[in-house]
Length: 340
Figure 1 (cartoon, rainbow, N blue to C red):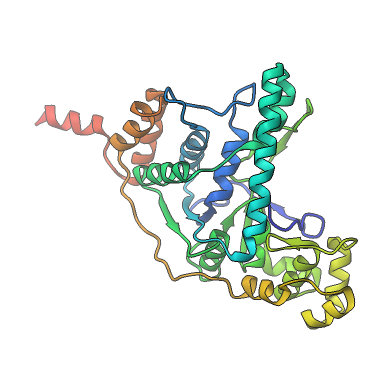
Figure 2: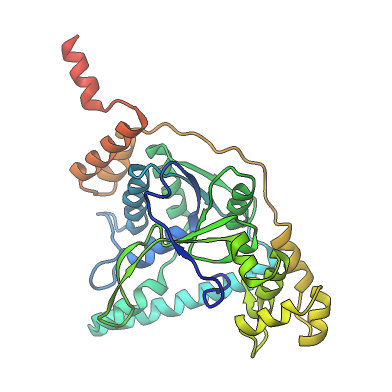
């Protein structure tokens, strides 16, 4: 879920063209959940292959990644490692919430209430270990880099941005800023026309970017104070204080020079200092961005032979990717064979 800074930080619009030539880190879990919740049939059902395996995440990953590559954006997908102990409560709450949503979705389906079913379909989505492994295998076949963080994927991606390995971090959550990401890019994989949940209203979702230093300057605080603000309103590691929202929290942190003095004013928050440290000195590693060679044959076999994707569409996409990377397509090699 992450911290919500929407009322405080004003993003600027950004286009695919402006990001061309950049290497950008993607919060893989966040992105895959987007695909699982948004890419569904009219009744809310996930896309599936003939074996009953969910393919919504693969559909989104393949076609959206292809769009990035065609726009000359080089993605690096960063997957979560072992979650911090302080996040266990949040993880448990999310599992319970998805289970509850799943029950409501099944009940609506049984009653033939399609609109109600669509309402609960997204929140019931589960990202399994098998789905993660499938996503990683697809990325390798496409020649797209991915890596696994020692702990939080957002923290690792933010560290890579701070070091200049990547231009910024793509995530829907604002937590990347707390971890020190120089730039947070939102909506890059969900841009386009989107229907509001439970309403017959469509909105145009466009990519947007928040640059950390200008944002901090506008708020008149440091990154450390931004972390304090987040702790006051609640993070993945703690509940916020009732009655304190983003704007009130901003006034509080602007008036203090230490977290301890803030806690003396508002009351104790369990593990506050530890949470502060987790954001300011997160568990990250020095990881080189791996290089994978795209394989037309492996990608087609993985998506079409095994998971019922339309072969002609996948072939066209892979040919475009191979053309961009300078690799020869299988048709070109076949022509060379006959010419020889």
